[in-house]
Amino acid sequence: MRHIAEAAKTTPVMHETDVLVVGGGPGGLAAALAAARAGAQTTLVDRYGCFGGVITQVGVDTIAWYRHEGTVDLEGIGIEFERRAEEMGGTAPDVQSRSQALDSELFKVVADRLVEEAGVEPLLHCLVTEPIVEGGLVRGVVTESKSGRQAILAQRVVDATGDADIAFRAGAPCHTHSRGSVMGVTVMFSCSGVDKARFLDHVAESAPTYGDWGKCWSVKTEGKEDRLFSPYLQEPFDRARREGLIPEEIRSIGGTWGRITDAGEATSLNLVVMAGYDCTDVHDLTRAEIEGRRQALLAIEALRRYTPGFEQARLRTFGATLGTRDSRKLAGRYELTGEDVRGEARFDDAVGIFPEFLDGYGVLVLPTTGRYFQLPYGILVPQGVDDLLVAGRCVAGDRISHAATRNQMCCAVTGQAAGTAAAVSLKDGRTTAQVDVARVQAELRRQGARLD
Image 1 (tube, rainbow, N blue to C red):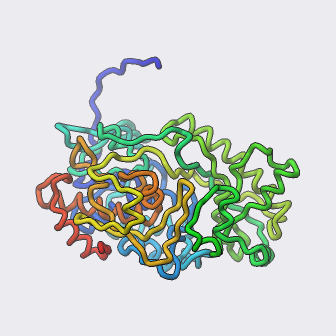
Image 2: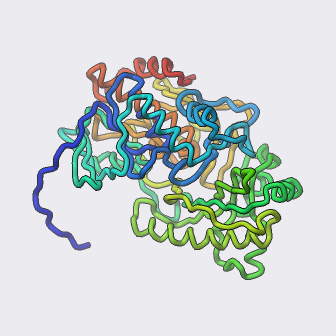
């Protein structure tokens, strides 16, 4: 690779804050709210024009579809997302669980209001390019925006980028995996013109279940999931391949649907899941976006031809960005394991809980038996740098634990923990690596989080 030499330059400081959260998805949004509620001056930065991350930018409206009879669930800010959206008329009963599906567009406003009410300083359309590290401490970030190249200084930083971008660029060890070993990416889309009654009659007749997932995704369940209803679609795409509409070599079309509104909108079609892309490579991201949109149109045509109720369906929207499940992950002070998740692990430094819900790497386990595990503070703490915490799907852990922690509600748990710890450490005059975890736990409980 060729290189160029850049001239030395000074960068103006546009803002200073106590706690800076980078990335406004479920993890980052929860982190910012928690830090502000713990008394810290807090700023939340996102590269897009709204907060909400995978909810608003990708279009995934079912953030708690794991919730079934018998589920022991988290508490705290993640539940607040659902409750506030419901209060604003921005939810509908989820078709496959005891949860609420969110109106992804209205959730942009829900997030705005939560941020405003907490006194968080919002900053949108702002790309963070690199951390500012002084003596092993992260002291802010450099940004690029329409305002130019500027800096934000902070006493504590939370990396909620999803890809551990800040931690990695600050020199913290991270785990990366080859293109062939990571979970697939998705171009989400929605349709209008759906005959809701006709489609739901067809679904009732075909009675899809989680056991059907193995037909497309080679998913292994515990067996107890196999007879539970799942909004799964596969037959129209198999038929489209047999009849030449979809090329035989394209095996990435097939998946689930979300809300079907009374107006005939299918709002969360998760039907294109493509393997072999590195989400930290700009060339791969470009190829995936373009190929995903091409495949989405093939999927819509197959639905029009072979699925009752979709005969007049047409493209409504694509997600604003690619849906990514898996990329770079932190090498933390503690590495969560699949055994921890499956063994109901308990930790002295617990900062939240999450039900035994696994969705990834060919494993599907739904939390129908009341089992849950604790999340330790150590998975948020990087090695080699301090006053930096990581939240969301890039927390430390192995592949099977990632199949749990990558989920949106678990991201909210680790986000709330990271934001709280950042604020408490600052208040107590300790670094984030040295913070009194008992004090963090007390503040989390005060905020309504469940730790045990």
